[in-house]
Length: 152
Image 1 (tube, rainbow, N blue to C red):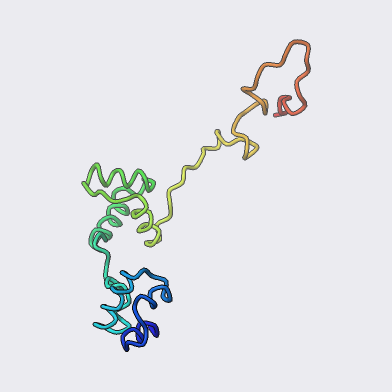
Image 2 (cartoon, rainbow, N blue to C red):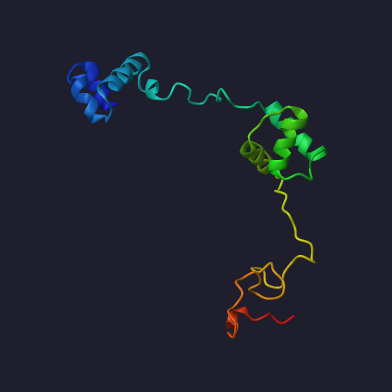
C-alpha cells in the first residue's frame, strides 16, 4: 500500500512500482485503479465474503441429510451418492455428500467381515498354507521354511 501511495502522489512511477510489489505492469495498473477508487479495501478480492456461485443451497443439504437418515442410512457414501442421482435426480459430488454427512455427525459405513471370513492373522486372509497359490517346487526339493503349512 505504501508503494501505491507513492504512485498516487506522483513520487514513484507505476513502471518502477510494479517490480516492487512483484506484479507485472498491467496488474499494477489494475491494482492502482482499485486503490484510487476504494482505497486499501479495494485491493481485496471483490468476491471476498460472498458465497460461491456454484455453491449448493442449505435446503439441498438438509434434503440430502434427511434422505440419508430416513431412507438410505444403510448405504455407504459412494452408494448413497449414486442413489441420489438415480432415484432423486440430485447430481451432487461424492466428496460434497461425504463432507455434509461428517459435518452432521454421521459416521461412514464400513464393511465388517463375518467371523467365518476373518483369518487368525490380520494380515493374512488365506487359510491353510501361508504360501498357497505360489509356484510348485521342483522335484526332490524341500519346501522353503516359510512355505510350510501353518498349524491349525
